[in-house]
Length: 374
Image 1 (cartoon, rainbow, N blue to C red):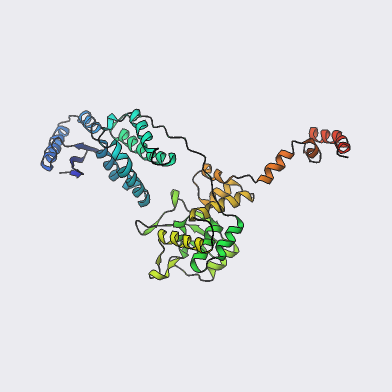
Image 2 (cartoon, rainbow, N blue to C red; image 1 turned 90 degrees about the horizontal axis):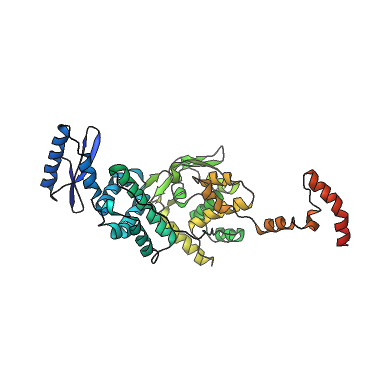
Protein backbone atom coordinates (compact mmCIF):
# COMPACT_ATOMS: atom_id res chain seq x y z
CA UNK A 1 0.00 0.00 0.00
CA UNK A 2 1.26 3.47 -0.90
CA UNK A 3 -0.25 5.86 1.59
CA UNK A 4 1.44 8.87 3.11
CA UNK A 5 0.77 11.46 5.76
CA UNK A 6 1.78 15.06 5.14
CA UNK A 7 1.12 17.35 8.03
CA UNK A 8 -2.21 16.15 9.39
CA UNK A 9 -3.56 14.76 6.14
CA UNK A 10 -3.47 11.16 4.85
CA UNK A 11 -3.49 10.61 1.10
CA UNK A 12 -2.76 7.87 -1.44
CA UNK A 13 0.19 8.05 -3.82
CA UNK A 14 0.67 5.19 -6.23
CA UNK A 15 1.54 4.30 -9.84
CA UNK A 16 -0.64 2.31 -12.21
CA UNK A 17 0.30 1.62 -15.85
CA UNK A 18 3.07 4.26 -15.76
CA UNK A 19 0.71 6.93 -14.42
CA UNK A 20 0.88 8.46 -10.98
CA UNK A 21 -2.21 9.00 -8.85
CA UNK A 22 -2.06 11.31 -5.83
CA UNK A 23 -5.32 11.80 -3.95
CA UNK A 24 -6.49 12.88 -0.53
CA UNK A 25 -8.23 10.08 1.33
CA UNK A 26 -11.94 10.57 2.09
CA UNK A 27 -11.27 9.51 5.68
CA UNK A 28 -8.34 11.23 7.33
CA UNK A 29 -6.87 8.02 8.76
CA UNK A 30 -4.24 5.56 7.61
CA UNK A 31 -6.79 2.75 7.38
CA UNK A 32 -9.14 4.97 5.41
CA UNK A 33 -6.40 5.92 2.96
CA UNK A 34 -5.43 2.26 2.46
CA UNK A 35 -9.06 1.29 1.80
CA UNK A 36 -9.40 4.19 -0.64
CA UNK A 37 -6.30 3.13 -2.53
CA UNK A 38 -7.62 -0.44 -2.80
CA UNK A 39 -10.92 0.80 -4.25
CA UNK A 40 -9.11 3.00 -6.78
CA UNK A 41 -6.88 0.13 -7.90
CA UNK A 42 -9.94 -2.07 -8.39
CA UNK A 43 -11.58 0.56 -10.60
CA UNK A 44 -8.44 0.90 -12.67
CA UNK A 45 -8.15 -2.89 -13.00
CA UNK A 46 -11.72 -2.98 -14.37
CA UNK A 47 -10.76 -0.37 -16.94
CA UNK A 48 -12.71 2.44 -15.31
CA UNK A 49 -11.24 5.93 -15.40
CA UNK A 50 -10.66 7.79 -12.16
CA UNK A 51 -9.10 10.86 -13.74
CA UNK A 52 -12.21 12.98 -13.40
CA UNK A 53 -12.59 12.06 -9.75
CA UNK A 54 -8.85 12.45 -9.28
CA UNK A 55 -8.68 15.96 -10.71
CA UNK A 56 -11.79 17.09 -8.89
CA UNK A 57 -10.52 15.93 -5.54
CA UNK A 58 -7.00 17.21 -6.09
CA UNK A 59 -8.23 20.61 -7.24
CA UNK A 60 -10.18 21.01 -4.01
CA UNK A 61 -7.25 20.26 -1.73
CA UNK A 62 -5.97 23.19 0.36
CA UNK A 63 -3.04 25.11 -1.06
CA UNK A 64 -0.97 24.18 2.01
CA UNK A 65 -1.33 20.46 1.30
CA UNK A 66 -0.36 20.81 -2.33
CA UNK A 67 2.47 23.24 -1.55
CA UNK A 68 4.28 20.68 0.60
CA UNK A 69 3.58 17.93 -1.93
CA UNK A 70 5.13 20.19 -4.59
CA UNK A 71 8.07 20.93 -2.32
CA UNK A 72 8.82 17.26 -1.66
CA UNK A 73 8.19 16.07 -5.21
CA UNK A 74 9.58 18.95 -7.29
CA UNK A 75 11.76 21.31 -5.25
CA UNK A 76 13.86 18.68 -3.47
CA UNK A 77 14.43 16.93 -6.79
CA UNK A 78 15.26 19.87 -9.04
CA UNK A 79 16.77 22.55 -6.79
CA UNK A 80 20.06 22.84 -4.91
CA UNK A 81 20.08 22.80 -1.11
CA UNK A 82 20.32 26.59 -0.87
CA UNK A 83 17.36 27.04 -3.23
CA UNK A 84 15.35 24.43 -1.33
CA UNK A 85 15.95 26.34 1.90
CA UNK A 86 14.95 29.66 0.30
CA UNK A 87 11.70 28.21 -1.09
CA UNK A 88 10.94 26.51 2.22
CA UNK A 89 11.24 29.84 4.03
CA UNK A 90 8.97 31.58 1.51
CA UNK A 91 6.34 28.86 1.81
CA UNK A 92 6.46 28.77 5.61
CA UNK A 93 6.66 32.48 6.36
CA UNK A 94 4.66 34.01 3.55
CA UNK A 95 2.65 31.91 1.08
CA UNK A 96 1.10 29.28 3.35
CA UNK A 97 0.01 31.77 6.06
CA UNK A 98 -1.93 33.68 3.37
CA UNK A 99 -3.08 31.04 0.83
CA UNK A 100 -2.86 27.92 3.01
CA UNK A 101 -6.56 27.19 3.51
CA UNK A 102 -7.74 28.24 0.05
CA UNK A 103 -8.55 25.35 -2.32
CA UNK A 104 -6.20 25.10 -5.30
CA UNK A 105 -8.96 25.91 -7.79
CA UNK A 106 -10.21 28.73 -5.56
CA UNK A 107 -7.17 31.00 -5.84
CA UNK A 108 -8.20 34.02 -7.88
CA UNK A 109 -6.59 37.19 -9.13
CA UNK A 110 -8.06 39.24 -6.28
CA UNK A 111 -6.33 36.95 -3.78
CA UNK A 112 -3.01 37.63 -5.51
CA UNK A 113 -3.59 41.39 -5.34
CA UNK A 114 -4.58 41.20 -1.66
CA UNK A 115 -1.39 39.25 -0.97
CA UNK A 116 0.71 41.88 -2.74
CA UNK A 117 -0.99 44.69 -0.83
CA UNK A 118 -0.27 42.94 2.45
CA UNK A 119 3.37 42.15 1.65
CA UNK A 120 4.46 45.58 0.38
CA UNK A 121 3.72 46.99 3.84
CA UNK A 122 6.44 44.75 5.26
CA UNK A 123 9.07 44.14 2.57
CA UNK A 124 10.45 45.62 -0.64
CA UNK A 125 8.83 45.15 -4.04
CA UNK A 126 11.72 42.93 -5.12
CA UNK A 127 11.15 40.62 -2.15
CA UNK A 128 7.44 40.45 -2.96
CA UNK A 129 8.30 39.53 -6.55
CA UNK A 130 10.59 36.75 -5.33
CA UNK A 131 7.69 35.31 -3.35
CA UNK A 132 5.36 35.65 -6.32
CA UNK A 133 7.88 33.73 -8.44
CA UNK A 134 7.69 30.77 -6.05
CA UNK A 135 3.89 30.97 -5.98
CA UNK A 136 3.73 31.08 -9.78
CA UNK A 137 5.95 28.01 -10.17
CA UNK A 138 3.96 26.11 -7.56
CA UNK A 139 0.65 26.86 -9.31
CA UNK A 140 2.10 26.04 -12.74
CA UNK A 141 2.93 22.59 -11.43
CA UNK A 142 -0.64 22.31 -10.10
CA UNK A 143 -1.84 23.07 -13.62
CA UNK A 144 0.50 20.52 -15.20
CA UNK A 145 -0.30 17.79 -12.69
CA UNK A 146 -4.01 18.31 -12.10
CA UNK A 147 -5.23 20.81 -14.68
CA UNK A 148 -5.85 23.55 -12.11
CA UNK A 149 -6.71 26.91 -13.66
CA UNK A 150 -3.93 29.34 -12.76
CA UNK A 151 -4.65 33.07 -12.32
CA UNK A 152 -2.44 35.66 -13.99
CA UNK A 153 0.24 36.83 -11.57
CA UNK A 154 1.46 40.37 -12.25
CA UNK A 155 4.67 41.37 -10.55
CA UNK A 156 5.30 44.73 -8.96
CA UNK A 157 7.42 47.41 -10.58
CA UNK A 158 10.80 47.81 -8.95
CA UNK A 159 13.13 50.77 -8.85
CA UNK A 160 16.24 50.41 -11.01
CA UNK A 161 18.91 48.56 -9.09
CA UNK A 162 22.07 50.45 -8.25
CA UNK A 163 25.36 48.59 -8.49
CA UNK A 164 27.77 49.57 -5.75
CA UNK A 165 31.44 48.90 -6.35
CA UNK A 166 34.86 49.81 -4.98
CA UNK A 167 37.07 52.49 -6.45
CA UNK A 168 40.69 51.56 -7.27
CA UNK A 169 41.78 53.45 -4.14
CA UNK A 170 39.33 51.48 -1.99
CA UNK A 171 40.62 48.23 -3.51
CA UNK A 172 44.17 49.15 -2.57
CA UNK A 173 43.09 50.15 0.95
CA UNK A 174 41.25 46.87 1.44
CA UNK A 175 44.15 44.74 0.23
CA UNK A 176 46.75 46.64 2.26
CA UNK A 177 44.64 46.26 5.39
CA UNK A 178 44.80 42.47 5.60
CA UNK A 179 47.12 39.55 5.07
CA UNK A 180 47.22 35.76 4.94
CA UNK A 181 44.47 33.74 3.34
CA UNK A 182 41.92 36.52 3.73
CA UNK A 183 44.07 38.80 1.59
CA UNK A 184 44.49 36.01 -0.96
CA UNK A 185 40.73 35.39 -1.15
CA UNK A 186 39.98 39.11 -1.46
CA UNK A 187 42.61 39.48 -4.18
CA UNK A 188 41.18 36.47 -6.00
CA UNK A 189 37.69 37.97 -5.78
CA UNK A 190 38.88 41.35 -7.09
CA UNK A 191 40.88 39.82 -9.97
CA UNK A 192 38.46 37.09 -11.13
CA UNK A 193 34.94 38.08 -10.09
CA UNK A 194 34.37 34.65 -8.51
CA UNK A 195 31.43 34.24 -6.16
CA UNK A 196 32.14 33.69 -2.48
CA UNK A 197 30.96 30.07 -2.59
CA UNK A 198 33.14 29.44 -5.65
CA UNK A 199 36.20 30.78 -3.83
CA UNK A 200 35.48 28.64 -0.77
CA UNK A 201 35.00 25.59 -3.01
CA UNK A 202 38.03 26.16 -5.27
CA UNK A 203 40.13 23.00 -5.68
CA UNK A 204 43.83 22.82 -6.53
CA UNK A 205 42.94 20.40 -9.33
CA UNK A 206 40.93 23.17 -11.00
CA UNK A 207 44.06 25.29 -11.63
CA UNK A 208 46.01 24.86 -14.86
CA UNK A 209 49.53 26.06 -14.10
CA UNK A 210 50.70 25.76 -17.69
CA UNK A 211 47.81 27.76 -19.15
CA UNK A 212 47.78 30.13 -16.17
CA UNK A 213 44.06 29.77 -15.67
CA UNK A 214 41.49 28.20 -13.38
CA UNK A 215 38.19 26.51 -14.14
CA UNK A 216 35.24 27.26 -11.88
CA UNK A 217 33.72 23.81 -11.39
CA UNK A 218 32.47 23.91 -7.81
CA UNK A 219 30.78 26.01 -5.18
CA UNK A 220 30.82 25.19 -1.49
CA UNK A 221 27.33 24.77 0.00
CA UNK A 222 27.06 25.41 3.73
CA UNK A 223 23.72 23.61 4.10
CA UNK A 224 24.82 20.34 2.55
CA UNK A 225 28.46 20.85 3.61
CA UNK A 226 29.59 19.63 0.22
CA UNK A 227 30.72 20.77 -3.20
CA UNK A 228 27.96 21.54 -5.68
CA UNK A 229 27.97 22.85 -9.23
CA UNK A 230 28.35 26.61 -9.74
CA UNK A 231 25.31 28.79 -10.25
CA UNK A 232 23.67 28.09 -13.63
CA UNK A 233 25.34 24.63 -13.53
CA UNK A 234 28.06 25.68 -15.95
CA UNK A 235 31.84 25.52 -15.68
CA UNK A 236 33.77 28.58 -16.80
CA UNK A 237 37.39 29.35 -17.54
CA UNK A 238 39.08 32.40 -15.98
CA UNK A 239 42.64 33.47 -16.92
CA UNK A 240 44.90 34.37 -13.98
CA UNK A 241 46.85 37.61 -13.90
CA UNK A 242 50.40 37.70 -12.55
CA UNK A 243 49.47 38.66 -8.96
CA UNK A 244 46.94 35.86 -8.52
CA UNK A 245 49.06 33.30 -10.33
CA UNK A 246 52.10 33.99 -8.15
CA UNK A 247 50.26 33.86 -4.82
CA UNK A 248 48.67 30.51 -5.74
CA UNK A 249 51.81 29.06 -7.32
CA UNK A 250 53.93 29.81 -4.24
CA UNK A 251 51.86 27.41 -2.11
CA UNK A 252 50.51 25.05 -4.77
CA UNK A 253 49.31 21.52 -4.00
CA UNK A 254 47.97 18.73 -6.16
CA UNK A 255 44.54 18.27 -4.59
CA UNK A 256 42.13 19.49 -1.92
CA UNK A 257 40.70 22.90 -1.11
CA UNK A 258 42.80 25.94 -1.97
CA UNK A 259 41.57 27.85 1.08
CA UNK A 260 41.00 26.16 4.44
CA UNK A 261 40.36 27.36 7.98
CA UNK A 262 43.49 26.58 9.96
CA UNK A 263 41.66 27.30 13.22
CA UNK A 264 39.18 24.50 12.41
CA UNK A 265 41.50 21.63 11.46
CA UNK A 266 41.81 22.96 7.90
CA UNK A 267 38.11 22.55 7.20
CA UNK A 268 36.62 24.61 4.36
CA UNK A 269 35.60 28.13 5.31
CA UNK A 270 31.93 28.80 5.97
CA UNK A 271 30.10 31.71 4.41
CA UNK A 272 29.34 33.12 7.85
CA UNK A 273 33.03 33.13 8.78
CA UNK A 274 34.06 35.03 5.66
CA UNK A 275 31.30 37.60 6.10
CA UNK A 276 32.31 38.23 9.71
CA UNK A 277 35.99 38.48 8.81
CA UNK A 278 35.38 40.98 6.00
CA UNK A 279 33.26 43.11 8.33
CA UNK A 280 36.07 43.13 10.91
CA UNK A 281 38.63 44.16 8.30
CA UNK A 282 36.47 47.07 7.09
CA UNK A 283 35.99 48.35 10.64
CA UNK A 284 39.69 48.04 11.44
CA UNK A 285 40.84 50.00 8.38
CA UNK A 286 37.86 52.40 8.60
CA UNK A 287 36.48 51.44 5.19
CA UNK A 288 32.75 51.59 4.47
CA UNK A 289 30.86 48.29 4.81
CA UNK A 290 31.81 45.95 1.98
CA UNK A 291 30.21 42.63 1.07
CA UNK A 292 31.77 39.81 -0.89
CA UNK A 293 29.28 40.36 -3.67
CA UNK A 294 30.40 43.99 -3.97
CA UNK A 295 33.85 42.66 -4.83
CA UNK A 296 32.21 40.79 -7.71
CA UNK A 297 30.36 43.95 -8.77
CA UNK A 298 33.68 45.76 -8.67
CA UNK A 299 35.20 43.37 -11.21
CA UNK A 300 32.26 43.68 -13.61
CA UNK A 301 32.22 47.46 -13.35
CA UNK A 302 35.97 47.96 -13.76
CA UNK A 303 36.08 45.62 -16.75
CA UNK A 304 33.25 47.53 -18.41
CA UNK A 305 34.69 50.97 -17.66
CA UNK A 306 38.03 49.90 -19.12
CA UNK A 307 36.43 48.87 -22.41
CA UNK A 308 35.96 45.10 -22.06
CA UNK A 309 33.07 43.89 -24.27
CA UNK A 310 30.00 42.94 -22.26
CA UNK A 311 30.04 39.46 -23.79
CA UNK A 312 33.52 38.95 -22.30
CA UNK A 313 32.37 40.29 -18.91
CA UNK A 314 29.43 37.89 -19.09
CA UNK A 315 31.69 34.87 -19.63
CA UNK A 316 34.14 35.86 -16.90
CA UNK A 317 31.40 36.39 -14.31
CA UNK A 318 29.40 33.36 -15.43
CA UNK A 319 26.09 35.08 -16.08
CA UNK A 320 23.39 33.03 -17.80
CA UNK A 321 22.03 36.08 -19.63
CA UNK A 322 23.58 39.23 -21.08
CA UNK A 323 20.71 41.13 -19.42
CA UNK A 324 22.33 40.53 -16.04
CA UNK A 325 25.67 41.78 -17.35
CA UNK A 326 24.06 45.00 -18.62
CA UNK A 327 24.06 46.37 -15.06
CA UNK A 328 27.79 46.94 -15.53
CA UNK A 329 27.44 48.89 -18.77
CA UNK A 330 28.34 52.17 -17.08
CA UNK A 331 29.41 55.03 -19.33
CA UNK A 332 32.09 57.23 -17.72
CA UNK A 333 31.03 60.92 -17.36
CA UNK A 334 34.05 61.98 -19.44
CA UNK A 335 32.72 59.88 -22.34
CA UNK A 336 29.29 61.50 -22.04
CA UNK A 337 30.91 64.93 -22.07
CA UNK A 338 32.96 64.09 -25.16
CA UNK A 339 29.89 62.86 -26.99
CA UNK A 340 27.86 66.00 -26.22
CA UNK A 341 30.73 68.25 -27.31
CA UNK A 342 30.52 66.66 -30.77
CA UNK A 343 27.16 68.42 -31.20
CA UNK A 344 28.87 71.80 -30.98
CA UNK A 345 30.16 72.88 -34.44
CA UNK A 346 33.16 74.57 -32.86
CA UNK A 347 34.36 71.21 -31.58
CA UNK A 348 32.96 69.06 -34.36
CA UNK A 349 34.99 71.02 -36.93
CA UNK A 350 38.21 69.45 -35.73
CA UNK A 351 36.79 65.92 -35.72
CA UNK A 352 37.40 63.35 -38.41
CA UNK A 353 33.88 62.44 -39.50
CA UNK A 354 34.96 59.53 -41.66
CA UNK A 355 32.53 60.20 -44.50
CA UNK A 356 32.31 62.58 -47.46
CA UNK A 357 29.50 64.92 -46.36
CA UNK A 358 31.01 65.40 -42.92
CA UNK A 359 34.44 66.14 -44.35
CA UNK A 360 33.04 68.68 -46.87
CA UNK A 361 31.10 70.44 -44.10
CA UNK A 362 34.26 70.54 -42.00
CA UNK A 363 36.31 72.05 -44.86
CA UNK A 364 33.67 74.67 -45.71
CA UNK A 365 32.94 75.83 -42.18
CA UNK A 366 36.31 75.45 -40.51
CA UNK A 367 37.75 78.82 -41.68
CA UNK A 368 34.61 80.66 -40.59
CA UNK A 369 34.64 78.92 -37.22
CA UNK A 370 38.32 79.68 -36.71
CA UNK A 371 37.68 83.35 -37.56
CA UNK A 372 34.87 83.38 -35.06
CA UNK A 373 37.15 81.89 -32.44
CA UNK A 374 39.71 84.58 -33.14
